[in-house]
Image (tube, rainbow, N blue to C red; front, side, top):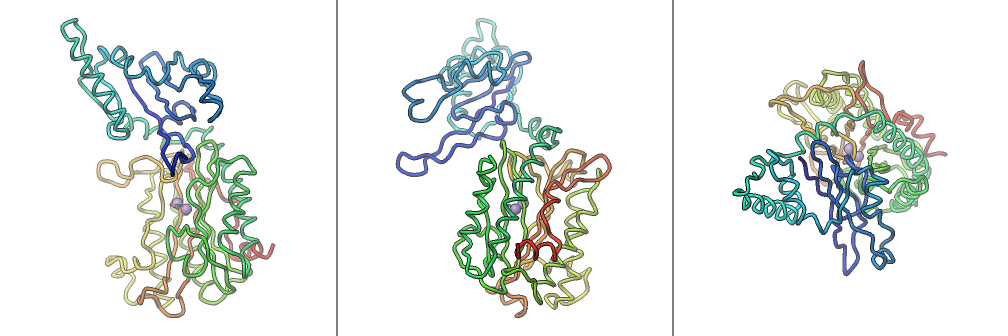
Length: 410
Ligand code: GLY
Ligand code: MN
Ligand code: MN
């Protein structure tokens, strides 16, 4: 028996809510995209609790599937108004030995579950028992979500294709005088024009020194000749995220140190990609990227000493402070344990993740050599492990320096 609650609407300001996004666990199990919903799964029944039809409310916020739609369109065996969850839950959990419920995600549903347990315990003399065991459904669910089914991969490929067009259009705007927000607008225009929900996460368009701020989302400066623009943006499509970074030279020519850094990041990414196969680990990919970076940072004059010692001391961290990969799926930083029994988890076919090495040389940091100041480069692709290697879902988005330059020049 499992009870999986959906996400709640959240207030943005006044009486305006944030655009609703279903909780990924409920979305994964049901496809149900509306607020105020929960799924109850028993050994042989799939029950949805949803907002009932309500003509007045629907005038304001749109048509609801209601209890009929929950069965007809979402395949539930039975459905009830969400307002009846509190009253019906005790009956469902009676005599169930274990209830899978994600405690701590939603306090008011937590309360409702506790009250239901109390209600059933109060009927002990009638011979019923309450679940003795409350288990976290995420232990099972997130292992399922970590390994993508072919249908999920199809959606992720479709998301990658929309993201490709968005990057291609955005690249052309990387000219002196354009504002970062204009580039952002172009990305979001393509995301929506092609039917995506919008960006899967706040888009990052960072020119010059802004490219050295990992999650720069103000996107308000004007692009200048000689700068690089780091664009980290991907569409969300039917709940699935793409997560892609490319770094473009303003005006269309990589020059001097910017080219050297770009080529170094690309080498690190290729080296990390080369490691991917079933049985490899994200830790090993990261170590590959770090190895390439440390050699390159010595050549660039940003580090001094022996590579082995510099790696040992993590001397590269002022310039490479994040890890190389994260799981990707319904959440941008998707669910799934990174370690199993204390060890980095071996990759398996169907696992999807990013490979996103980057180097950042902030002008504000005195450790940054003069000639590298205000250069930030990240190259990020989305990858699925296959039976005998890997597939880059985002491989059609150019990243070789000459291709990237051509994208900017249009
Ligand atoms: N866009 C967030 C990330 O790359 O992890
Ligand atoms: Mn990422
Ligand atoms: Mn990203």
